[in-house]
Amino acid sequence: MISLAEARALIADNISPLRATSAPLAGASGRVLRQDVRAPEDLPAFDRSAMDGYAIFADDASEKFRIVAEIPPGAAPPIKIRRGECARIFTGAQIPAGASQVLMQENVRRENNFIVPLEKTRARHIRFRGEDARKGDLLLKSGTRLGAGELALLAGLGVAQPKISPAVRVAHFATGDELVAPEKKLKRGQIRDANSSLVAAFVRQFGGEMVRQERVADDFDLLWQRTRTLEKNFDLLLLSGGASVGDYDFGKKLLTVLGFKTHFTAVNLRPGKPLVFATRGKQAAFVLPGNPVSHLVTLHVAVRLALEKFSGANASWPLVKIRLAENFETKPANRETFWPARVEIRHGELVARPLRWQSSGDVTALAGANALLQLAAGAQPPKAGKDILVLMLEVP
Ligand code: AMP
Ligand code: MG
Image (cartoon, rainbow, N blue to C red; front, side):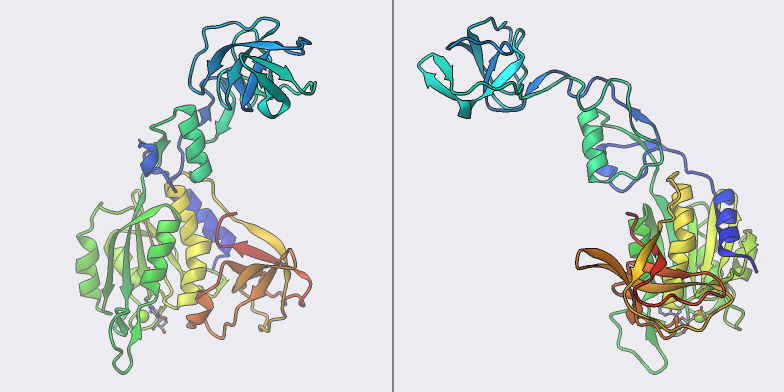
């Protein structure tokens, strides 16, 4: 059995980034940038007023200034300001030639076509050209995931069609004779399919697009029929359940029959040991152990890396030290353990609160989990008040 670190290295080594495409900014939210972006010009591109007021020659000691122009934002003033003159100007408007200071309108008295400064100040109140960035500065690197702020920057730079990664196409099959849709009434022995909702939300969060999602009974032939017709129409195949060695666990066999090459079938991980990873050409597949908490863990420690590799994103492994808020009991395991937890703010500090979790089949521990407490193989959990390593589920 391999370690999680070895498993992650195999995933990283066997998946290549999808071919990048250009797309409008409106469709780029959550996608990964696939080009370095430099400032095409100075930012801002011209000196701008930072205030509503009057533009003058800097430190002009005149008693009165004659208003020779009015410059609204967006105008290109064809004038030159001389001593004793000023231009009425508004925030964001271009500073006219000759001017190099803006007097705030609160600090002047207006007399017809003149202004009289009420106080002298050396403050310029100008956003100078190139103050934010210089032409050629590297502002965004390839591999950055595009959020609201990055999209705003691209818009400001005029990069309207950035090169980005396409959405990773994911096909997901939840296997199990016992599974029914969430809206169904349960018959004896049945459980509601929780994993499909978990997987769908997770895939969307990390830049994937669900191209197919179905529940399938524990019937090898049926699952084979469903998956073989997919051919090249997915990048990542996820099978929930059937990762183990029970009579109904045929995920690994299915992947072999479909022509996938298996890279590992078990990881020294708790929960989530029976985890299968395989590839077929540029496509990849995982069989995830069906327990919902095992699902949460394997999605974040393994599948997330695959989605990042496909989309050319920087691999994220946000492991941080955070104070443990409460004691929790767990038998020391010889497997690396990830325990569902909630990182929250108490008295202005971050703390990690372990969530109640008896067995990996529990679904209640899924709600509220925004982190996983990490325990090395064989390690005891620290006592409350001590630091613990925490893998954040949302990339900070
Ligand atoms: P398996 O990996 O198929 O052996 O499943 C392990 C456990 O997880 C069993 O108790 C299953 O009933 C449960 N399970 C499997 N798939 C799901 C699912 N989609 N939603 C909720 N529980 C599941
Ligand atoms: Mg099963």
